Image (cartoon, rainbow, N blue to C red; front, side, top):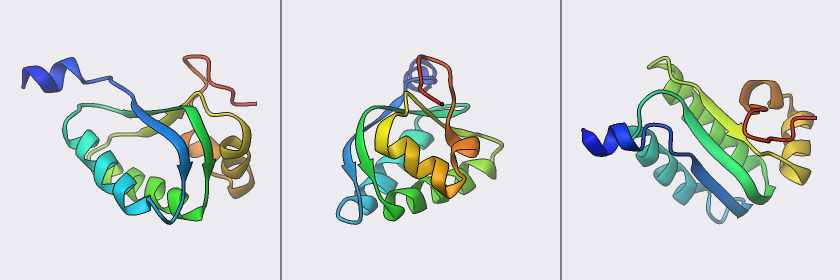
Length: 105
């Protein structure tokens, strides 16, 4: 319980390129992170360079899973190509959080 409280707001880092080749690993890791934390799940995208539809599908699946418990999934520090993908698909409003220096424009 102490570890869960300490990591309660620890952001989950999304790094590099997220695509079909690593979508299953992302899903497993992100769901494990969600189990080990309380409240909203924040993903830090400051080092995320690319995401495809497979990564979007993972985010939607995790979002749906968390929503059952009333917990949001939010992305911070989103920029560049990943931000553009979220905007084009209409998912930026759902996921992008402009706190902590995120670029939500």
